[in-house]
Structures are given as C-alpha cells and as structure tokens.
Image (cartoon, rainbow, N blue to C red; front, side):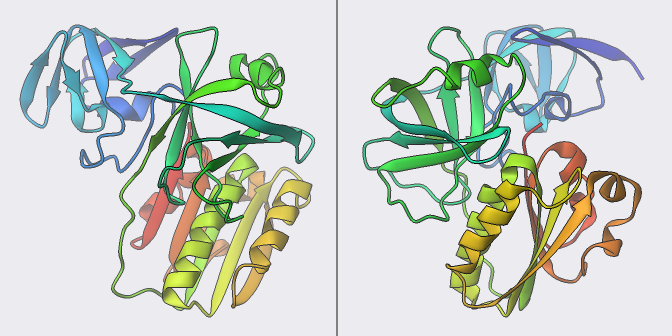
Length: 293
C-alpha cells in the first residue's frame, strides 16, 4: 500500500494512504473526540499537500477533520485552535509519586465529565489536551486535571514551575454527552495511570442518571494498586449509592490476555487511558472510550 509522510509540529510520521489520519497522530498533538466527524474537536489546518475528507478533496490551506480524512500526498498539518480563555493557577500538587493535580480558577463555564481542556504552553506554540476530573463537584469556575509527569517533558517541566495566581491559557472542548434509554445495571470502568480520575468522574455521572446496582473497576498498574488509583476509588465511594468492586490488573496481564478474562462483556464499559489500554475495549458493543496517545 502506498505510503505518505505526515508532519505535525515536531513530529514526522509515515502512514498508508488508506488509513484515517487521526490513527497515526498521538493525542498530545491533537484533541480526539468522537472520531466520527460529529464533534469537530480534532480540526486541523492543512499547511501543505492534499487530503480527502469523506470523499471530498481538501487543498491547502483549508481546515479539515483528520478523523474522517485520508492523505493523498505528503502533508504538513497543524492543530486548529479557536479562541482561548485565561485562567489562574489555584494549586499544583503531587497526588502520587509521578502524578500531579492542577487546579485552575476560571470564569464560570459549563462542562461535563466528557469535556476536554486544551492547555497552551506559555513559551512555545504548542498545546496539550487533558481530561477534566469532575468527580469532586467543584462547580463550574474550577478546572481540575490529573497529569502524569514525564522526565524532561516540555509540559511536565513547565507545570512544575507554576505557582498560585500564575496565568494560564486554556480552551474547553465540550464533547456531546451520549444519552442512553437503557443502561446495564452494572458498568465496567477500565483505566490506567492518570486517567482514573476522569474515568471515575464519568462513572459517577452514569450512576446518578441510571441508579446503577454496581460499578466494576479494573485498575491497570505495573505492580500493586497505586496510591493514586486507591485514593480516587475511595473518593468515588462517597459519591455513589451502589456497590463498588475493584480489580487490580498487572499491565502485562492486560496486554497478553483477552478482555473477557477481566470483565463481563455484557456490561456497559467506560475506559480512559492510553491507546495500548483502550484498544481492547474497542471490540465491545456498549462502551465509551477516551484515548490520549
């Protein structure tokens, strides 16, 4: 199959012309939403080359949706950013060895557990997308995100320099919240790393709307249940009126076994995490997935 070269920011990718572009772009370079061309949060600007979007050829320098587009030639693209707002840091605190919680004071704005916030770096023309953690019912004038620190990461290093009252540029992306006429009496929640807070936030919303009988949590870790996961799950228990079952799964077991070893496939499943975690969930009929790279 013919291949083409894709450039976005400092990233250079080789991809098949038969593949949707978004499959090859990590989530820290672009916001990923519904992946069906509806929510439009993944909009990009075509800097050079040609793509085909839903059968229509798009030429430079137009805006297009990479989730429903394929490259026709070598291309250069950039994330299309709309208006941003300015908030101020309330706090930056460690909540585990390598995970921090950032609280940002903002002007009152609606969002849900499905919302994503783009954070814009102060010194570089780049942004990163983070899942909002809404399980603590902070109200609509405070954003809370959980971030796994990366050694010498541009955003990780910058976040650790932020102090209370420092200004920060952000943009909230409100992804449409699905409405379900029927919901299984139990749901599965699957997450690893810093995605647990966002995954449990969605679990709380579903519990409130559908009066669930139980929540089955699969926490994926390298070893024992992490302090971060344990604290998030304990906090969830204060917000739901149903049973909570926890299963810690070693990362290697998750990678090498079929998903039915860990969950009942008939139950609705929420998964937030990296692609290597969420790709097993794609096969399920009833699910919500938020993948970040």
